[in-house]
Image (tube, rainbow over all chains, first blue to last red; front, side, top):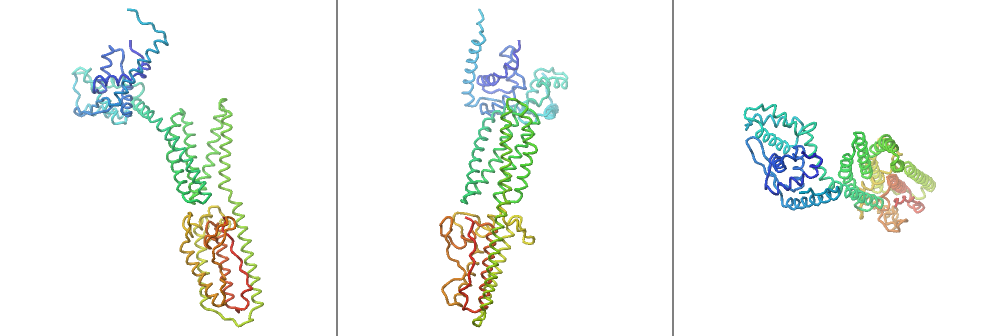
Length: 113
Length: 424
């Protein structure tokens, strides 16, 4: 099952920040592959959503970039800035809190083991 | 694993920019991303072209530039609150500074122009563009955006019109007229008819429309309230000029009837000083007329003399810009010296301590403050009155010239018509 893009849109920032927190520096393609891998293909980040988010995070000063030349093309690596590290914790705990609330709101029973 | 050649990289980059992605960092990101996909997923001898087209298509719904638009929107949204805050602060600041400046202007206090220019500059260069950008983003339809653009233009026009008006720069009335035209003929009707259709906004629309029409009316009144002041000033000028001519002719008649009681003792130095001073005053009058708005020496249009804008012109020409401690300029200094010479020669001739031309300090009837002769008659005085005062001086000098040719015995009987006071 692949989640709808609407669901992913609201959490994309948190996903990207958390990935960067765990992996030091990553480039765009790597991020999409990593998410695919971790979620067993259930979450697929589209390029159309990823790059706008990365640019926004950069302009917010949450991530820093370094470029690497690979032959004729340029690869942009993203890594967390100090303020990005704090923001990641904040965002992750906010999302966890949100999920708890949603569980309560939608009356989702824990799956029986 | 597929190996991408340099030509293929160039091809992809060109294609990305041909598809409307203009941001360089985004181009580079997409290029690397596509290259990665191709390298990982295409077999060594696969069809590059076909695979590329398929890959790039998976990036978007309708067009590749959507990614750039989305990026820009996210970046803009980040600035949204900063822009909004800047807009409110700059708007409040410019409104406060402008009102203060206009108040200063009315009171003739120093610093008025700086405040007004600052206020208008901030409002038309910071506030209005920000307002337009923020509001335009909220509007969906092109029609709404055009209406907004017209409103912004009208706002900029009225700011500039007022700035030009208070600075006496040319073009103020034209801008003001375009502003009122734009408001009455385009903006208000569009605003009114689009708002009246919405039942929720009906009352609001009507009230705002009335306020806007009132604003335009007030503005027009302000710009065109000249006729009364103009006619009034002209009336005063004419009256006083007539009076002085009447009194001159009367006195001349009196002089001629009592002439030759004693043999004339003509003083050539006095004669020359009088001629020089009169010529000088004439030149000064012409230059004052020239420095005023819409008044040219060749075609002196006396109706324009009373124009409100010509209120400050003589002050600026004779004193420099209005300030707390006005100092008479070179023209007034020389004039005073020449009048003093005439007074001195006259005293000699008549053997009396009385100065015929009164250059002493005067008490302002309204404020009760004692002022110098120059300030009393020429500072912050409308052009019509300044010209009248200068003419009166010429008349008085001509009288002295006349007396110079007559006997000394009857001079005490001559009455001098005093010049009119400055307006405040």
